[in-house]
Image (cartoon, rainbow, N blue to C red; front, side):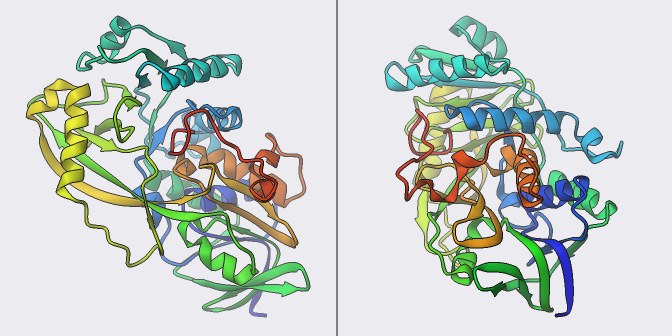
Length: 395
């Protein structure tokens, strides 16, 4: 055995680096993080960076609220005055047409308020005061969360990794994990491209690469990989951070928007995406029809973009579970292995708190929030964690 550690973390995205960071804060001993490429170089780099506590699943609301608090005091969390999450607090508006989606927004705002999250239902006049570009005549419910915003995923993961390293963790980019070491039903380490590594506990935060973990562990993961496209547009007037993010439940693609690049608008969809078979080699071409559809949806909600210009587009991947919520915690029948997969588009939003909860669980400590709702076995138990917004990344 070439080396050993107390806890090994697989994956150097926002989740894996947050886990490593919190492990060091909680006195885990020897912590080593393995990343096959570079820190924040995978799906974290594809994230649109939105931060909100608006969910219809109460457990997600509580986790997002705790994560937002960490993002807000990121320098204090890292204990470095230079640390920054790149946080922009612009607020979040969610608009819904009459019917089931309107009821879902109203219920979600009520649940947020019951948890002490600042959120409210607002009328069209108040929404237009916040965002004068909006057309709202077809909208029945408007929710507003003033504390929401967006941050820089690359900065966050890099600072988590730096903070973990300062506290003694080994961060090993460019070292691929190739398997698990087992003693009976217990995972006791890793196989890597540079040799075997013994570990008291292994935590896998492999995102869309979790299929490899399934092969190593001999289990079937309740997860698919889905592709989600994004585009940016601009118009004659700069679209800046004075405008809140918007989630449009009246649009066919359930689009969301935020300011990007200082003057442009980013548009993504909150639908089920397109399933792909593997994280590499998938068709990443974005059709002109899709761009035209999202441009039309944007122009409907913000008529100033009727004369807008398409700027660029790109794709990202989600590791998606059947209920569009994460799997967090131990794997039944495999002692010494904890997982974070199936983030379903929520990973960056929840990363600070997921990191803390899994670090606590790995060390046998009480967790600040219950992990049981996110348990691996919930699908076999027919107990999905499903919100009132249905399939897609709103949850």
